[in-house]
Image (cartoon, rainbow, N blue to C red; front, side, top):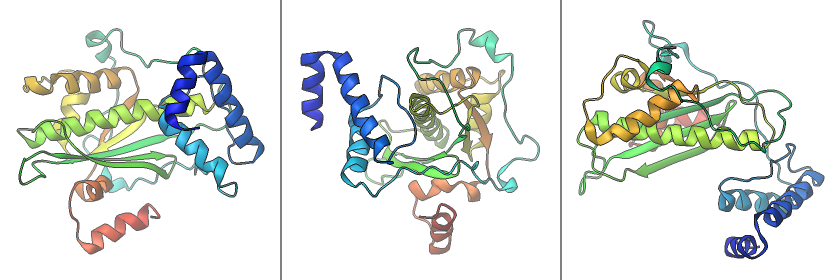
Length: 267
């Protein structure tokens, strides 16, 4: 079934029948030992999920494997003076309604919780012709790299600060998506996603209650990230720039640095 046919099926027969069809597809994957988690009724990002399920169904020898061990973090990545820009209860005064949206139809959680981590970075003025910046994101479930992206930012950032904030907002969006997906599969997710960035100014602006925004044009990104921090969706942590593996998505690295990141991620 193509994506277009799936959407037409959804429109003609109603969302409930589409949900039942997807549940049957997933049941077949479980029977083929390609999938070990149960899915909720609602599948976000249907196009992307259908492609994954279709691949597993077509290639019956393939399996979806997630390494449940937490991501290995080098202690040198943390700032000894501020190792974890963690949650401050005073955030609730600024964002009293902050919280993580949950699907009321998500299945009951079972099994071992999988930690999620994201590394983000930006290269300011990457495009020499238009001076658009680029955002780099690495997403981990446990210690397994499951998603990476290098995307041009939609507007021309006037500073490294702005470019890094846009990349961090993209990371928050990915955190929300991956947490929703895991819960839809019945995986318990209770801890905030750890987000690592190498720009201390951006980390502190987003995670410290008394910080103020001085760039009006990134106000939306600013409040989205801070609300995610207040809602315990993400926890922002500073890391050393040499240990920020998202560099591989934003800039041309030397051979040694490039292959070192590949080896650490088993790519």
